[in-house]
Length: 346
Image (cartoon, rainbow, N blue to C red; front, side, top):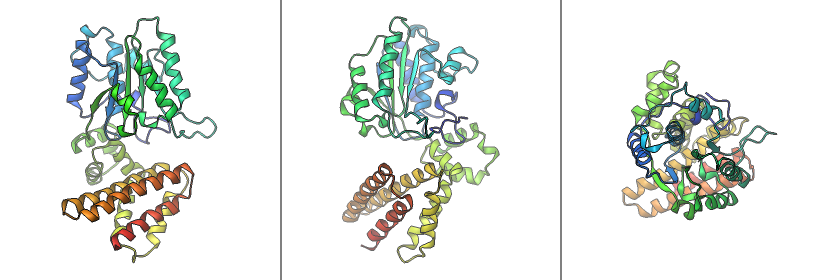
């Protein structure tokens, strides 16, 4: 487990995680690509959040650093050996051959900053310069690359244009559409897919949660997780299941329903130390609205589908703006339901 605020309660930080569930075909492809000497210098691991992309990135890095000569590397990428020096160095951030770029933590507030800045990317430039004479592999993992601000993205691009010898860039992306097209064009994109319910349950068991949660709750969690372990943890550890229940109750009652439930949910999500729960609500709200668009489209109600799709975009932008300007979270929650009610009544 981790005290890092970037890691969910109950989770294992990707650099310390020795287990990966699912993605057997992707893992096999990467093992073959490395052994054959055809590994691209920059990989873009793309897929939904919480499915194991960062864990796979560190797993691949461990494999390469443990077997630096590609032609003698194993044909499979095995679980990292927790007793090995490479695994220990990666897990503690002490490896001289691996650099992990993520949103930094503000030392004054202890909170995670909103973006990966150009100063962070400059660390990658210095990292390559300091290790250029060793002849060893140099690996940079950016997790997630979606968090690069504009200046940082341009700085990454310059490195990708002239990659050093025996270097590997691994970019993790939950929404690769946010990346500069020029960055995408210089990477080999590897699409990764949501986990199966059984893989989610196995991952939760690996975290020891089968000892603290009843089977029915775990089953519902896996079914509601959309194949994402991070979503499953939000459901179990951050009140996500209760948020879903409250959300469904409020929208089913509509604008004429009692307002107490809406205000109660708003109060809960705007309380201190509920950042993850609020983020879950935002994702769930936008996802729910998007699903209404899909339902209408499948039923041939194209006008309704367009209106729901536009509302999903509008709500997403409004919630992002509220975060940027630190606006009142309760009001943001109330506005989401007000917009839904207006469209339901139309």
